[in-house]
Length: 322
Image (cartoon, rainbow, N blue to C red):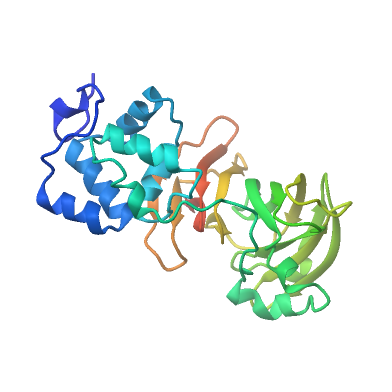
């Protein structure tokens, strides 16, 4: 039997109403914030691991991912209101905190509607995006679509090169009318991006395609068969074939907004098995990786990493070769 580190006695105590006697530093953090620091210090004070905390929340009928709790306590994500109110109240109960002490730190309890979002952009790809001059700026940034789920399957060849990436997405229209998704691809070192090809799958067809050889960037429109209604969900897939690069360092996807789930799978040629694969998340391109876990390459040479409630940031699998 294993036990959580910290105050072992408090882990097994039954969940009850909040009690007093909090240390002064924790009480001040609960009063002034920020939320992520208050949550992190409260968890540490009670001596609970995230797995044990999640189990206690489930006893109260609250379902929340361990990765979400991890993002919250590190400030990588913030609870959304009103959706997260019941979860935050349950955290106060489990952690024996004064009522509303955490809730008051997450902001006003406003309705979560499909409000217009600012147009997110790819700064490094601005020249390439500018070539889609007839497309509204919101469509160029996919601002009319909420990405609910992404599944990337990457094929890696016998020379350790990335051969293809098949992407399946589930999106939801945040307002009336979106009819396309603009996909971006950055080739590995040595890639001849002018030779890359795009193959559409279900739910879309290829529109205009633009390349920039110097940066090894590619942008392509994936056109839906209709304009989506506000709130409508749509599933589509496509494959990018780019097999001229050097040994791949792995595969990462940039999320400019939150996404409910991301699954990335790398399939290795039997003659080019990796020395090591690491799951990692970065808050930005120059940030230190967090949530780093070593992955096992399973039968058939496939390694997988799953991220729940991911972004904003960069998620993926880093590959090391012998």
